[in-house]
Image (cartoon, rainbow, N blue to C red; front, side):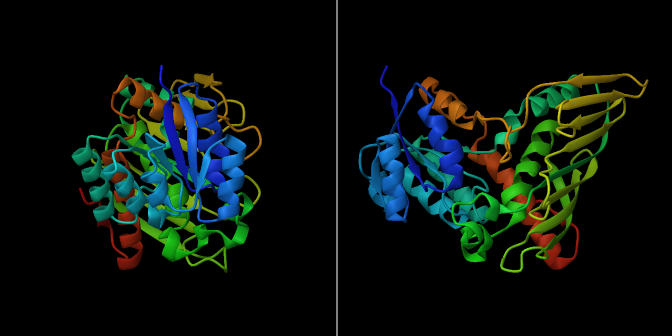
Length: 343
């Protein structure tokens, strides 16, 4: 079978730790091209993976060397690079948040449709075993009616793992557009939509920069969310959890409480109202910390969708809905009002 030829655009931390090694370990993929505006970084990455180095994404896209690309660049470049690649007849896996506005996201989805190509957004939390089991338990009725939830995603900040440290684009509003809310919060909005099986319709938020004096984006955010059926809960996204990462979600239901990634051993704990507790040890969640899950499954599922020609598990439309919650949170913080998520 002919291998899928893949290029990775942007050779920063997410490419180094996730995309490149996961493509390399996929037997159906040939890594043929890499691109970074830092020529030395591009060349070093190319040498390591036996690929051709580019410093211009336009040249990589038009090179004829690739069938698909991963877009692992600063957020403000996600849309223009994705649209250019789709228009050139390439499939695209784009990092989150997929875009910096609803209009950009819509243009990305339209480009995929117009060119008959697949666009997937790299929301990996859907593929964590505890999250998938929780979704099944909720859908089966095991938990009963869902009343509330609280979810958090926080760590010490990108300077701890970004290739550029404190000089990283993550902290620059012009390039990142949004800080912890885009880096971490969008993961959790996508997770909640997936696990609960319904859309988030209203948002109230406080979005602050109070931990990173050198940043021009938010580093702490707390949101109150309401779903279409009336479930209410909170979401916290932070770059100020300095000693230990928190990636937990707790769902409060009529028949049980689900604790996801809240315990180092039991990745899912189900506490029933009759006092019974069922613990699931389903493996560690993907993490920047040592001992975290090694394979995000994002790349493998993207490749499978291309080879077998079926729909990608996180479409552009799905990515756009999760982005919409973040945009509403930013608007709520600015207006100091509850904001309806735009459809």
